[in-house]
Length: 390
Image (cartoon, rainbow, N blue to C red; front, side, top):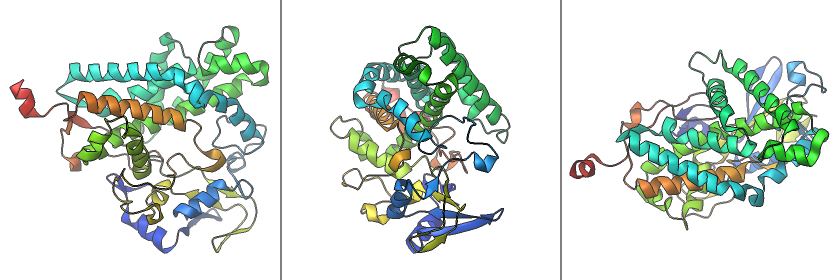
């Protein structure tokens, strides 16, 4: 239920569950209780708790603590703290500012390609996915000649058309690809994140660790940003006032923030494993129980103000949980905002009368996906009447 939606909206049952009981035991699996947290304040409390829960998934998979799994999502302090300290300097506003001209160039190039392919294009394939992919490649410092191969690996790891059979193989292959890129940059560091970390830390960070961090950056920033661009455009096309505001520099930030809250494309957090018996808002959590936070439920909580079930960028709301909260909050949040700002500004300026080219009820969404999205989004760049006049 937490992963199912009705179009862009969580199922009504999730809101009913949250309003009745924001901490609810969902089921018992292999003798372990699984709890769902769906209220805003309850979610913040869990996500901010660094003592009661573990996100280290290795014991659940029969792995020892010496196995390196890379990335930040499934590690605890002090390992998590050390890895995050490596990445954080590369994601400061000052360091990321160097990417802004490149992001703008990528957006402009995709808009030109859409123009050439129009009058009807698929916004998912022609706009939403290429932008974050190219930006991440530039961020990591992958050579241009490597990017097409990496793009194919990236597509395969998110392709679940055959039941996800090839996903794990693609994940392994992309991890190996990035570790090989790290090994090559040991000899000749590039200008991107990989090369910068090698220059600053040298052998203090291993190829395996840096490859895992690079893979985590790719995983965390590719499909999520692509889904935000496609679903965000769909949401804005249903609210023409907000679509127009997204094209205005003085308003685009508030529109982006509201879309991040409203859409919550990352539907649930990484699981938390209770390290001890505890009481969570009156509920007895046993050691080893799994606690999952519904971000889509928490971000629609009425405590965030009126109209939480609609887009309303005019309301000054508390901070949304679209990027998570606490020490596992998304390290690439500012980069995502930069991409969304540039993409929406460019899209609205170039195509102020963009419209859906297919009925809303014919769109196919990614049901039961942790990262929610739409499979395809056919749009008409200009209304048929204006095209006929031209």
